[in-house]
Length: 418
Ligand SMILES: *Cc1c(COP(=O)(O)O)cnc(C)c1O
Ligand SMILES: [Zn+2]
Image (cartoon, rainbow, N blue to C red):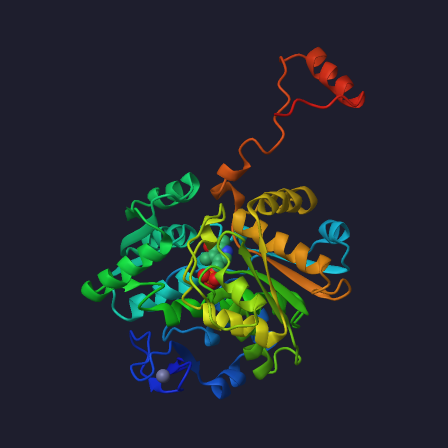
């Protein structure tokens, strides 16, 4: 039985049926899924969850579908682990990485939102899905719609990284590279969506799609032994993930699954596209659009759809925000790889760099629990690392040649670097 009651305006509270509605027709506020929490409390216990498969669907009652899941059956439940070596480097006591760089099937947290969006799109009767994407969403929609047998149109800015383009094209969708910024792609998609009967996962079925991000928060709490951490540092593009992690902890508290907590949420963006960070640092809820200029392309949304809610999530929790320059992003990508063996994309570099700054500023205390959200894989964004890593030691295929290099290394001679 479905626990989803309907849709509710986030501003005026007006109720709507659970159909394809994404703005309130009275106040133009955005709408959000509403659940029957009393019914959920009766079935969703820690034990019931623990007995279910280790996928994001273990929190099914808190997800916006009516029937059984049909798309993305293996998504979610990525590792959360204590990062001791990184903690030593940063000078903090209790640090965790929540690692969606190994998300199934497309190596970013967008597999979560798309699993839910496509399951719901099928329930709503759509046979064609679409999206406006900064790269990872394109990959997830392309892959999961292929497996679901849905027709798909995927719109991206024309200047995306080669890895993101290949990881969409391999599934043979109609991939449309638009000569413009993400914000222009998004505006075009809103027009197309008004004309064609397609499910644009992050536009007309956004209320359902966005709920998928809650599973990232549910997993953090469950994997920490059913408690919310004191601090979470979260990368923001459209600003949805940070609001949904906050909502996830609130729902678990409401259901009595975790103790009362006052988790502080921190927004991380690239300095070259930081409209949400700028608003938070001014203690304002007004997000002024910017024109992005950063190598962290997956986060390059100049006019974030949920920017206002993101500022409220951060400021309302007592958290804060920080931005990272391109140089800091690359250094942080290398730091995470060298200390914890995790190769993250540029967005992960943004998050770790921002976390480092917040710790150094004393905004995040060194003796409380901290989770850093790693949301995508580095193989997809290799361009920024070109010429910034060491090179392989090249030798002839003989033992003597190898030992010659070994001796040189032991003698402290620098290995060949570019
Ligand atoms: C989309 C994305 C985000 C941010 O998501 P929003 O919900 O739009 O703020 C973070 N990290 C990566 C890698 C992404 O692709
Ligand atoms: Zn309203």
